[in-house]
Length: 124
Image (cartoon, rainbow, N blue to C red):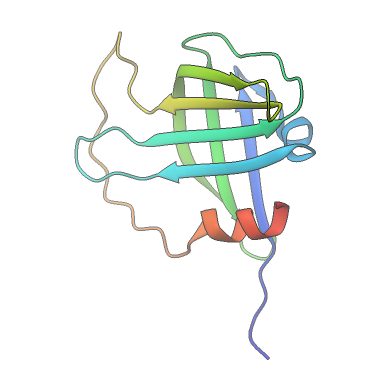
């Protein structure tokens, strides 16, 4: 029997931990760690009547496993939100680049695990 890991995430919105609130109704988290000077992207979809965050609110994302700990993925600036009234879902799109500020700093970080699929399987 192989090792089993329990996906874990943490999200802060403007410095406030909103993980528990989001986890109850999470549909998906998609995180793209783009290379070079391309902006990293974060997309979150939740079910229910959540208040839309404001344009340019800040989100901090940490992903990992209960068994190994959390990895800080970055700070993201909300660029767009959309509500699907038929499916009762809120989608949030955020970017690591503050388009009113400086460009993304180049980093050499290699993720050693595939978080997105594990989180999707765990929470869906």
